[in-house]
Image (tube, rainbow, N blue to C red):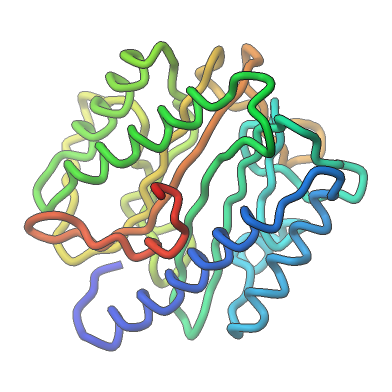
Length: 254
């Protein structure tokens, strides 16, 4: 959305702090032996305590308050009583919500307990690449150039990017224009980031795959060539210089 007055900025800051705090607390709450359903219910309780509504449920009737993707699941993992978290699991939590007509989105991947499967390098690459990408965004920068930066940095780290998952505009709804802030460059895309707009920028860094494929449940996405995927996401306000990280409360860079 385009921020045109102080009240809109206040509204975006408030919901962004809510989703950021929820993500941080869910990450800290995750324990070995816990189900993803229990973790999701905990996060849902936090959102409700702020008066916020789950964006995936409100927008798409997603069967959970948040998306919790474990190991081979690339995105949109459905919380389940049957999915029990184990030592060394690669977990991604994506939290988005609405409050007072404003919407914000954030996410992060992490390793639960000891990194017995060596997922940490993939997690670190995703975090670091998101930081570099966001640091390069300001009004007038081509969206395609940020995609090029993300893919280039992924390759330098020995990884790939998922090409059919993307960041997006956010604010008055969960997904707004620009609709595709991709993790690679489309040379024909001449669209530029606009000053005073809010967008969700997210990395999708992978070991093997370049396309996310939907499973029979209609939600769960896995890589077309297997392997693992990490995602980190911030909602930001674009300026003439460094962006304002609205979801900073999530602590994904700490």
